[in-house]
Every structure is written in structure tokens, then in C-alpha cells.
Amino acid sequence: MLFQRSGYYFIVLLFLVLIGFWESYFSKLFSGINGYKHFHAITMLLWIGMLITQAFLIKYNKRSLHKCIGKFSYGLVPVLVIALILLAHSQITVHDFGITYARLYILFLQLSLLAIFIISYVLAIIYRKSPSHHARYMICTSLTLIDPAVARIPLNIPPLPFDYQVLTFALTDLILLILIFMERNQKHGREVFPIMLALFLTFQGLNLTSTDNIIWDNFSMWFAKLPLT
Image 1 (cartoon, rainbow, N blue to C red):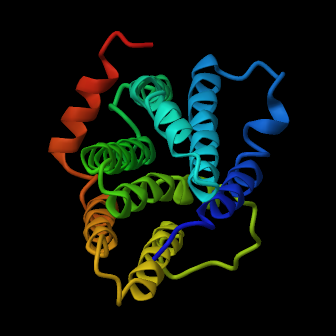
Image 2 (image 1 turned 180 degrees about the horizontal axis):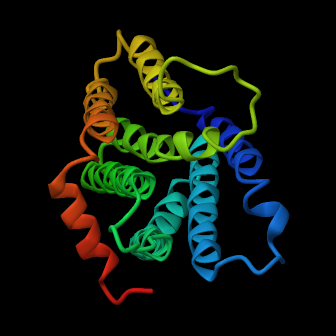
């Protein structure tokens, strides 16, 4: 599969992020928002902007410029990781009884999506000389934004007999399944999306079933007490 239209898909993702975070962030830019949110938002918007730019550079065969801008990611990604860790840390409140289950759950979600992002990016860099693998792993970095954006879109959905989170997870998995189906006849790189689907499913399963235990509770308390924010 050639990803010459991926730039347009990344633009759609950008609009999805703007819609999802409009009420909680973009509409309140000048209302005393926590600086860590600004830090995180800037790094993520830079990442999406880079994905869009890089996709169109490949589309129009500007490979030298693509490689040059790609080196910018070597600095951006570590800063992006730090920004999310600081945001996650700043959102934790330690009560007399410890940390609320909701925050334990969200912390795992934040760190698990970050882990998937890092794995996708590292593999994209490792396979940077294989365009078929590199492009697919870069696409997978963008899929970590689906859940945070869609989960915040104000939808009037009737009460569900299961966790709403299942829907946002399922959307990401569905996209990967569609990509896998579309690539069923490809000879190079088609193993990327099945690998990443397995990775997403693993972390999603842990998020839904394993955040209410003493091990995660102890880790979260340790993380919360670090002098980061």
C-alpha cells in the first residue's frame, strides 16, 4: 500500500483533536490553564504538524527535506515524553486514603499510550531505511491520539451496559483491522499493523482489568511522590 494520502488523514486527525479538546482546552486558552497542559498541547500539535508535513513531502517526492525535518523528531520526541509525564504527575492528588481509582485508571491510560507511542516511534527510526515499515510505524504513533480525542467529544450517547472506554479502544482497533485488510496482498511491511494491533490490545486489556491492584497502586503512589511538579 502506498500512503500518498496519509497527509489528508493526519489533517482529519488534527480536526478530531481540535474538536475533542475544544471544550476542555482550546476554548479556555486564556483562562489560567495549567502550564503543563500548554506544554503537552504544544508538543503534540508539533508532532501532528510534523506528521502532516512529512506525509506531503513524501507525496511530492521531497525526500531530502523529509529526511532533514525528520531529524527534528530526535529532539521533539524526548520533549514530548517529558511533557506528558509532567502533565500526568501534575494531575495526581494524594488523599488520606491514597489516590482515587479514577486517577489510577487515567494514569495507566496516559502511560500506556505513551509507551505505545514510544515503541512505534523507536521502531519507525530503526526501520527508517525501509519506507514500507517506517511509514506504517509513524502512522501508528498517530493512532495513540484517537482515544484521548474521541473520548472528549461531547456525544449524547445513551447509557451503555459496558465502559465507554471500550468504544474508544474499539475505534482504534477497528482502524488497524481495516488497514490490515487493505494490506492483505502487500509483500513488504504488512506485518506492522498486526504487531501494533496486538500491542494496543495488550495495553487496552490491562487498562480495563488490571489497574485496581496493589502493584499499580504502589507504583502510582511512588510516581505521585516524585518531586516533578
